Image 1 (cartoon, helix red, strand yellow):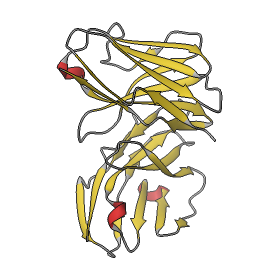
Image 2 (cartoon, one colour; image 1 turned 180 degrees about the horizontal axis):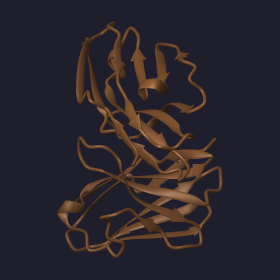
Image 3 (cartoon, each protein chain N blue to C red; image 1 turned 180 degrees about the vertical axis):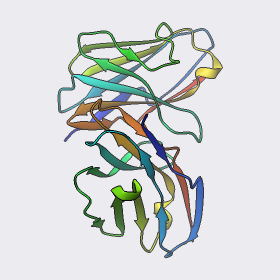
Image 4 (cartoon, rainbow over the protein chains, first blue to last red; image 1 turned 60 degrees about the vertical axis):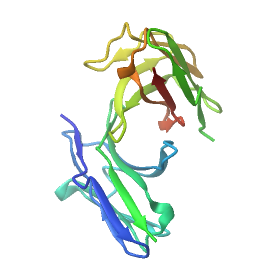
Length: 113
Length: 112
């Protein structure tokens, strides 16, 4: 069975702090994709990143960075120098051959001014 | 590119009525669309996979007679919540597959 675990239900940080959101996944497939989405209060999902299982290279995009480690089945997301606008719910998701997305339960991030 | 729209963005209806939600891929054709439901402060749960020209595939526990899905064209899928009840109040999100999934903005349904 496939599963995505986001153990952190809610995180609060003060603006300019760094914060890491954890994501652990389970799958028996050798080819799969991992995603991160941001969901602001409006509800619309904002795509952040897609990673395939053969690419373990870490990625940085501005203040965002992702650490993909197959050895620990983790795909963690770090926001550097957090801002109030980063406040949202963040979802990690897993997809494989069926193209169905399995979402984690989400982490609510509150960035306080 | 790869824009998916949903209509309406929100709807309030009386218990017992039916509500139709549209999901359109605006700039690409999608043979497969997906419907998700998200209850407050919960995750997105896949309800069904909608394939153009064929019957939808429902996830375990989702009543196919209550949530009617029609994928009549390569750019349009509709979800009809029949005889809606307050427990059907939720945020419904569709996605269209074009190599990966592109998500619509969601429809907030409130059943009184």
